[in-house]
Amino acid sequence: MRSRGTIILAALGAFALGVAPRSARADEAPAPTAQRDAPTKRRVEWNPEWPRFRISEYVGTAVLGGASIYLYRWVSPPDQPKWHGNNFFDDALRDWFVADGRDGRENAGKVGNILSWGGAAVPFVIDLPLIALVHRQPGLAWQVLMMDLEAEAVSGFIKNLLFVEAGRARPSFVDCAADPNYDALCGSAANNASFPSGHTVNIAVAAGLTCVHHYYLPIYGQPAADAGVCVLLSAATALTAFTRIISDRHWATDSLAGAALGFGTGYGLPWLLHYRYGGAPVKTGAAGMTRPVLLPIASGNGLGLGLLWAM
Image (tube, rainbow, N blue to C red; front, side):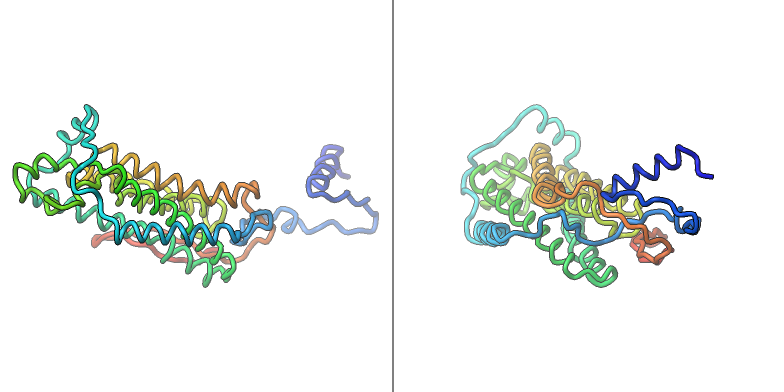
């Protein structure tokens, strides 16, 4: 015989689902225990409560994306810096961390290039194919792609506009005046485009996109894996910002501003315009289904990712 507490819980559960509890019938067999106790599993699917990409967003993404490309390709930073921006914080971190020789600075720059562009590719070359091909959700992949492009367009426009309008001299400006061979950018207008750190913006956008998508969509199939890729790209963002200081290409405040701009647009725009309307991530009662799990793999030769199927 069911206890009063069980009956109350069942009634409350039915009410929460928006349906009235059915009266128990004497000849009605109880549901199998395994079916009643089956754990819920999040699904990779578009929540109907999330607004789909709007016409205004398509237009805004195209306009800002085009403007970003125009600024990057055809509008140069000022020939002379508008802003040197020395301060105790920036000067102290530069003194502590910048590499002594040009080779060391260039090597740090190469590491930053790999981290920035490699991390920026994750939402596009890993997540989108998984959504479209493994989870068989091409419509969802399209929505995620457009959110990604929207964040890239907005962050790119702001970044490239600040290069021109802020015109901050890179930390190497004074050293370039004393030694034109101090850095490859010495004597070029690009040496006056320090604010913000573009490399940091690029990977921070990807980190924000990855964190927000994997919170609402279990793309890798396991909570630890979905949270782990967010942590991984966030750490890679911090490391990229650090390499920009070591390479003497950016002040610390340039890197901090780049991280804030990139992560803010990458996480903030999809959440503000779409995900926040749906509340908690989508769940389903289907248990026992296979799901893809993306796991990090470490070996003596380096690091990588492996795709496994779990029950």
